[in-house]
Image (cartoon, rainbow, N blue to C red; front, top):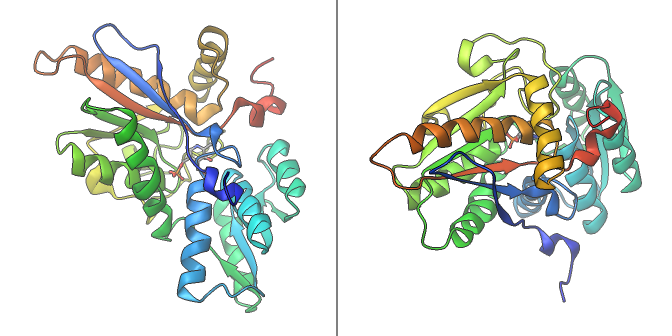
Length: 302
Ligand SMILES: Cc1ncc(COP(=O)(O)O)c(C=O)c1O
């Protein structure tokens, strides 16, 4: 028996369809208790703030978030007895808001994007009653993946070598934390980022507009260790959504936009590696961040 829901953080690694001569496997992060990969940084960031003495119990946790980190923090706050206020761009899906309310957290909606939400969170923190987790800068975010997701993957692949990690980038915490851990175990592993085609800051140096939730913040996050990256691929939202429908109908895996995008890029990398005579049956690991249930109101599964 677990003593807290927070101890159930973790996910399976599942083999999915890939090109001939290669294996693609995905960390299906919707298995986490709050339903996404962001339960990991939420738990680690709160525990780090407690250890540092910035969270003592009377403060309210505040965070600008497009959704999943907010849900993770709302869950951790409920389990650990903290009030939580989330600052969210009004464009993000209503499912996320309802889940956050369900956990008893407050939401403040702001017009604009995640940068506007960050400004508002800074204002609240300046009052002294709020403590921000700062997922874009907080080292506990990548550290959560270094200490949990990375080791889980190493255990789950058994005696196989991971040849590539392919993952979308928001704060960069996931790719940085897993990438650092896998590089230690497999020095030659390729680390490939994925970003929205119309908001490809890493590939082009210029921000744009995109409809992805969670991926492509429109700036280069401090938590992204660019020195780990071998390549960055871009994916169109329509293609990612089509891939989510295919994954649901053909493979029985119901996931959201950034997972569809990561899967398309993972298959591309797997194809490249399969064509390389030096690599026998390459293994490409990718991440499915959350469930497609968080996107039904967008109509993408209609
Ligand atoms: C749905 C979704 N995909 C991808 C990401 C990107 O993960 P990271 O912030 O670790 O780069 C996030 C982050 O919030 C997300 O919510």
